[in-house]
Image (cartoon, rainbow, N blue to C red; front, side, top):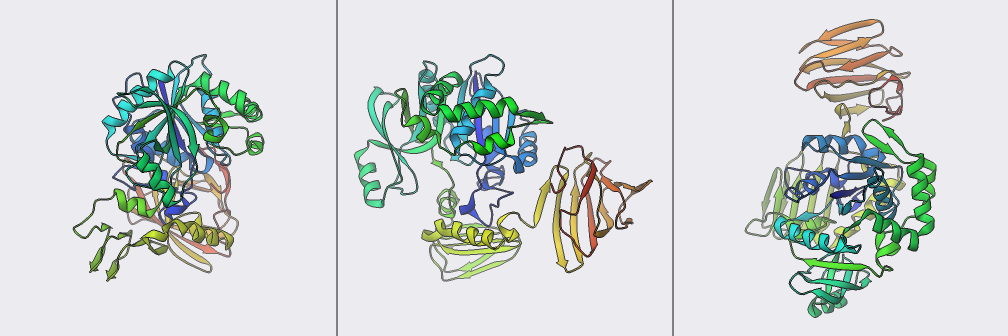
Length: 474
């Protein structure tokens, strides 16, 4: 059996303001009408003996991850929660240990959750080739046949050819991201592939290699699995133990050291969508090579990526630019400078600005809320509650709330009172009153919430009961 291991723990800072700390690129529909995570899982349809995936994600993203899998009818083998990011080696290690809990030894197909692969049939053929060698105990990495001399990717130098018709080779060496001149030499030689970060191996094989080449890390990973607990649909790793694990990639920890490494080269329209320039490269272009999304008017614009989420963007006389608008931020950059967006994100974090962390619309396991207006002592939110979902039983020390139902129906608990609100009906929740909101209907509940008080922060929540097992500010 093949178990996909989906690595979904990244933050995607180079795609700010679309990607945020609490809403990263793998959970966004950047390429088509599905999110990157959903596309990663769905493109595996048709592979024989495919098991349910193991997804490794950040603890903060757990409810969105689970919901997106539910939307495409995927019941995962496990959703493993990382308390902090520790790169790919620990993530793969805990996934391999989890996969072997039932005394089985499946093949693991390790896939980052943020890739685009246009020619899925060619991708499946590469997996079949990789399976042939992985079943014999080899460690497979999938190399992308380069289409251009890219400086944003690492490279793999191919060694001895194992099978000419598939291109399978021993791995000669891994190479860091080169400068442009070196990248051109690599591509012209035909001896190098881009390092895709996709792998295939038996669970027992990667565990054995980690025990050999990174024994301390592997021991610590076994400890956090032993300390881990099942929490609803999620497996929580031991918090303090995971924090102590050194951060390392599977390339450095194992693949550069193993004697059993094999690279399977293939070309399938691959891109890791690591920047807005990558979104331009993979997007559908008009006659002037522009990729346009949303409400955009332009004149004399060429080779540009313009994305509007909520406002009209008007552009005149620009070439090779990126303009991205969200409800709370606008990015403007030359296309060849978009890698520096992460420096803006650092400034936002240093200033402790919310724009680095979340969007104006915030997702919760029960639905979402969006801030419409905020001033000192009052805030207006639009709240959406999914059918059958309920918020926690809670109270606030510093704010009162007034709820008005726009559509759907709301079951409201207010102190000892329970009431059903329909469209155009409202209720008032005084400061300090125990309350709960739930949607008993079959359509989404939409309501407007007006908060008033001396402090309106999300941490002014005292929870008494929560079906999702959340802490106070989640």
